[in-house]
Amino acid sequence: AQTVTQSQPEMSVQEAETVTLSCTYDTSESDYYLFWYKQPPSRQMILVIRQEAYKQQNATENRFSVNFQKAAKSFSLKISDSQLGDAAMYFCAYRSLNYGGSQGNLIFGKGTKLSVKP
Amino acid sequence: DAGVTQSPTHLIKTRGQHVTLRCSPISGHKSVSWYQQVLGQGPQFIFQYYEKEERGRGNFPDRFSARQFPNYSSELNVNALLLGDSALYLCASSPLRGIAHEQYFGPGTRLTVT
Image 1 (cartoon, each protein chain N blue to C red):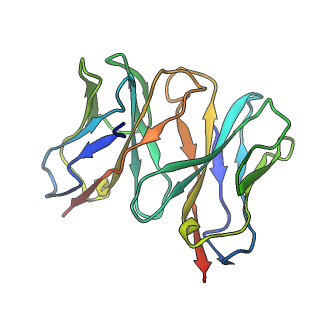
Image 2: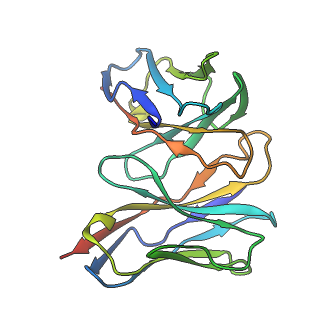
């Protein structure tokens, strides 16, 4: 079974600075998707960025980028020019390409709470 | 376009009672998934429904059941509530069942069991 581990329960960053959130995962599969989701106090889970495992190029979305190290099974999220609105829980998630059973749905880590200081 | 909607927003129930949570997917989305998020944890997969059929089930007891209606809305039912069922229940919809299709989450229903 796949597992996702986020080893940083809480992180803090100064506004306009850069912060990196860590995520490692365990799988025996060669093809899969990885995601970072943001969950603000409003509770709505919002997709931040997605990475396909077969793509070597790291995904980027504006101020958000990932460092995907497939051999190391590592998937970190870098937030540049941090803004007050970035404060939230951030979840790393894995999604198998298999459709059967519970596969094909998201496996989440425990999350990292990010605080942004003005 | 309206996003995924869930009702009710909050719910308080007593141990042993039954609860029904509701989810309306984004228009045109045929797949609905349910997740349970216990305080301080990441969401855990409960069910996926696609075209009104159960397509996936997580590691939850038979007290949990769900169904999807012809309009693709869905209900999650939990019988014989336990204190440990207190959680945020999230619904997510996607246009198709395929892996490449994103899951769009609703705001969740906060269930408190006393």
